[in-house]
Length: 284
Image 1: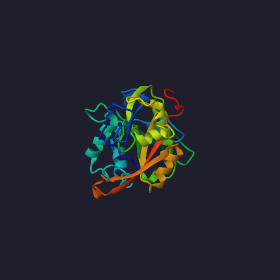
Image 2: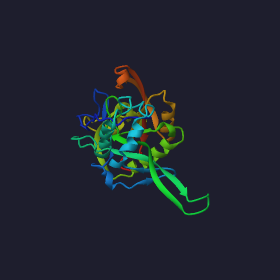
Image 3: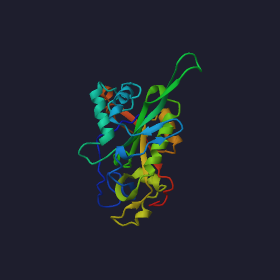
Image 4: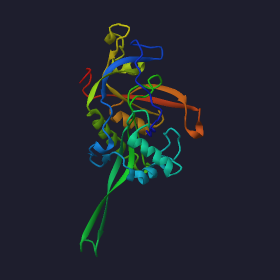
């Protein structure tokens, strides 16, 4: 999956009533405390093969190399590589600061591969050996929208990623997202009310969305916290990554494409949900 960070944000406006004609339900759930930790305060994450850390201004060239690959950008909002460094800079600014004026911070990370280059004086095994460690940006992603479109998608925070094509099919995306999700679930939390797609609530409550609200007009349905992702059903690799991480497919739909070379054409999507570990009951 190469979900682009979508800069069209949504609010958690709480309409009256537990259910609504737009297909959403008012829920009571847990949610990370906002604002989220700033980039420069987040601890770096080390996995078996990756360094996972927030992007910095010094990563502009590496991010541009990633975003210059047509294959890596096939699932993005515009569906094309960045035209120049200026376009990449806009995306890097979003990674670091979020959408200007919205108050919505991102929770985005870079996937770096430690790269060792070894040089020796003379023949192998002779002379002085010097090893230099570098970091190669091979992917990026995370929670790029705290509230996805509740009417069309789910309403839960949306996660996405993209990787350089030469690192596809090697388990890096699964390893990266597993680390990012672990950090996301570990953030301090409080209890909130927000609107969520009725289908998504049905997944969270095993299909029974009315009992928790007690039938009261303004009662919110208590549900466990989730994150959301989507992928084209034909993208078997991305669907497999999500399923390995425990995501459950709950909905398929068609919407107009936003990519420049096929604007308005039908786009098939599958929605996936992942429940916060250990949170079958609210507040855990």
